Length: 332
Image (cartoon, rainbow, N blue to C red; front, side, top):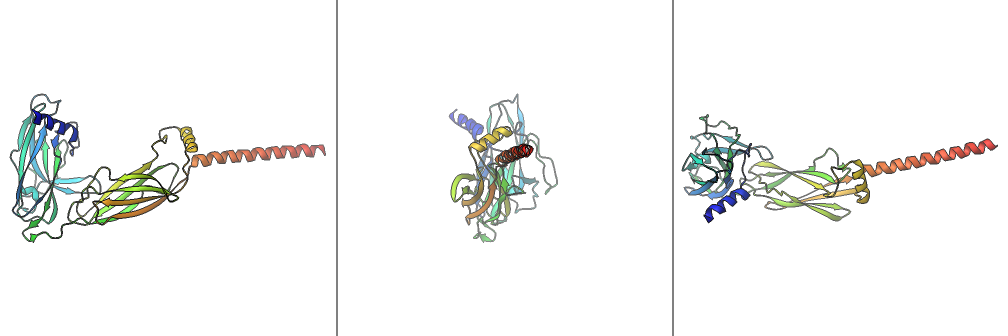
């Protein structure tokens, strides 16, 4: 009973998964595996499935293996039917103890699976995925990509330590900064809402797990705020580029307020001038990355207001001067 409660709490609070329709998907745990394999080594694992509380009756689910590739610079992945002839594809190394089961409300069921290193895959991180679906896998042509809808994915990341060529001696991730810039066409802003783009390439053959760091905001040599880099703990896959987005905001600024709300706040808490953002990726990065980008904050609402006041004052002064001149000229 205690084990059941622990598993339920694990699913409720800790489960993450890839799904295009999470409202219908079956919760699973874990959503990711990371482990190492040497030649001829085999390992076994468990995948837990939870019957959702809104189930009525039995729900049949189907479990199968797909190949997986990382695509793009964000969270996209490509899934495909593995070709059984391709023994270097680790998706073909995986065996499930079952391909289907029934779930009822509140069920916690376990699927066991095993993987054996056949010594053929490339050194470094290799990818595959276990799919849990409401429908069986169609008989598609090996190599074809698969469009996922209500399926969920448990991702498998296998570090190959040795293969048929012997020990893998050059296992590493290698970090290179591609870009640290402002996500803007200009380098000036009228309020502290400054977006940054960081693009980092992993030139190695190992996945780079959760690189961490900071973006420090400076003005006049004084640090005024620090932004956490990669708060989502995103990974960088081998030989890919990962795009990270950060934004510096004044949490008290009335972004949803009207023009005058924002004007009053800017007068009370003025920000004006030249700023620097200094990037440092110092954890899980080889080598460490340091970079700087600069920008301006120019509060146009305040400038416009003082411009109007100045012009209005000048006009009043000129009108008064002209009026006094006419009166004086009339007395002559």
